[in-house]
Length: 465
Image (cartoon, rainbow, N blue to C red; front, top):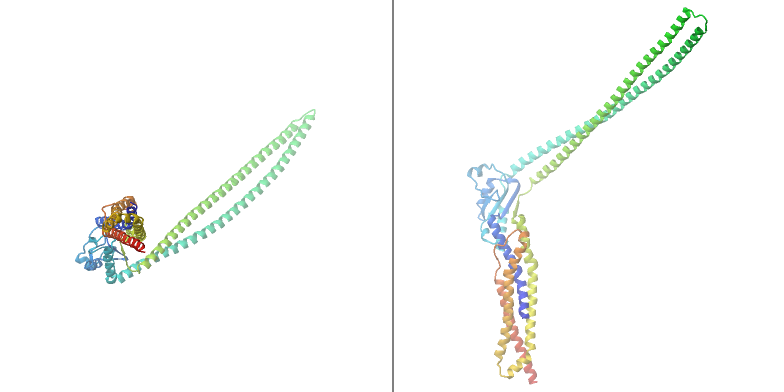
């Protein structure tokens, strides 16, 4: 039982990575054949013409060429001669590649041979003329953008100058307004002084009027002349007071109007200055943004100008994200897990041999007892050989079934979402598990046979001695 278990572990470890790898390749092949995915992709900044397509179509190693990844394309005679169409990419199906399994060695050989042929014999038509034309167009566009940047810089400098002038004019206007305010303040002080003098004069006139009235009323006999004098003085004082009050009120009102207008002018001037500063700031921000965009376009055009002189590129299916992921999974199985599988199989092989040797040597006394009873060696040998070989074979066959069938199915269903390809059939080959099973079975039988003969030989030698 232990022998079968060890054989099972070794064989399943040996065949699982290879079986999973072959299944990945087959499922990927079904997927890409169904999608009619290209085998090679040519890319060129200057583009390809119908003449290039026609040239490739005549190559023995190429089945079809199209500027579109999902449809066929045929070149007419006029198109091949005039070459009016420019295509940035060409998609190639290699002859015979569809019959091979994707990612298999034979498929890679076909693709590499086709790639080598194209790299040696392919030279896009009209390269120099198109390069010169594209370079001239790019340079004209760059010069146009550089000119616009120069104009933007001049406009920005003009706005800065306007901003400086605006600040100077504002400061001058504020200084003029301050000067007018000082004049108004002086006028206010003058009116106040005149008001004070006028008030003093009126008070003196009122005192004189009071003296006259006292004099008139102190007389025993008041004459008409006295009354007229008193009345005249009273009218003079009253009229002067009204006239002065009216004059000063008018002057204060005029000064107040002037001062109010002065404040309004200052407020309006400040608002206009702030509004213009805000407009200039927005214009400068817009100019800066336009300049940054123009610089970005120039860098992009310069990059295109460099690319226009670069050679065309050729890629295989590894440029497809899902294909690259599948190829990586396939390589992981073959390069990382397959060596571990060989190591585990080798260890299990060695352990199985040790177990068989142990079984035979531990049963030496029983073998001697069977021989004393008259049991022939060939019968005893066949018993150990048959049981050892059968146990190893059962374990190896079970491990092969698990490794070639269950492991690929479990892997594909577990990782179908991440690798992007559903399970569509097993791709395992049975040569490896068959060879491993036969080797383990034969080695087990041979080990049992040799161990029996060596054990019995030692026993016979000891008896003779």
